[in-house]
Amino acid sequence: MKTIFWNVDTQYDFMRDDESFKGALAIPKARTIEKNLESLTSFAKDLNIKVINTADWHTEDSKEFSQAPDYKTTFPPHCLMNTKGAEFIPTTNPEDPYIIDWQQPSFDEKEVLKRRNIVLYKDAFDIFKGSTHTKKILDILKPKRVVVYGVATNVCVNFAVEGLLKEGVKVYVPTNAIKEIPGLPLEELLSSWKKNGANLMHTSDVFEIILKDLAFKYKVNFYPYIG
Image (cartoon, rainbow, N blue to C red; front, side, top):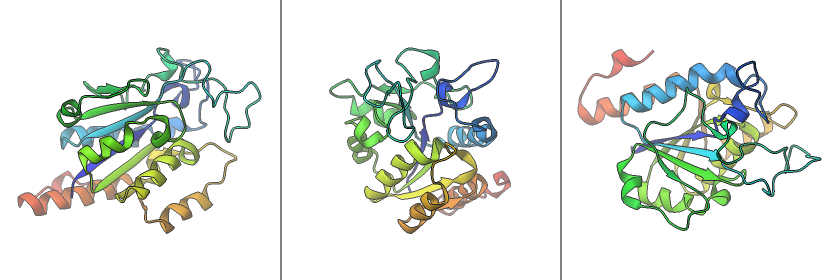
């Protein structure tokens, strides 16, 4: 089964709130998932799995910015273009990515197939609305299974999960590699994902499923790598 990973918005403005960097919209306890993010990133590299890395890439007049944000549809300014806050944290920073800006009219399909890491810049919570290129990229790659992780569970991760399910792909979510914004409904959201067909599990379960697939396909014992 063709698998790709989907790394959602693991950027400084969301993932950091300490002496090293004060994120403009830091998600509480986001750093607690970094070890699992690192495992997913390393696993994808070791097994040559393609990764779609989505990222907020806002102009100062972005529609989701507000001086009086409701933290549901509007938020304070964050992830402004060409700022530190918009960069990926080291744990998930894509190697040699092909970058597709939401502002550009087209992209090179050959590069999408060639590069292991794709960065999709967006200007909205929903990657399917924040970038007009998203659906075409899925049409090119034709994944059967997508592993979704990152932040925030109840905003951008939710839009990614729901959008991918609507596209008819199997969605796996390692719940120990996502983090939510406190105060927004969570349990109801996770139940909705499951009801709509998403598979919720641990990162180790994701690895085991993929390795078993590879072992079956290539008749190779991958099991020593599990755990």
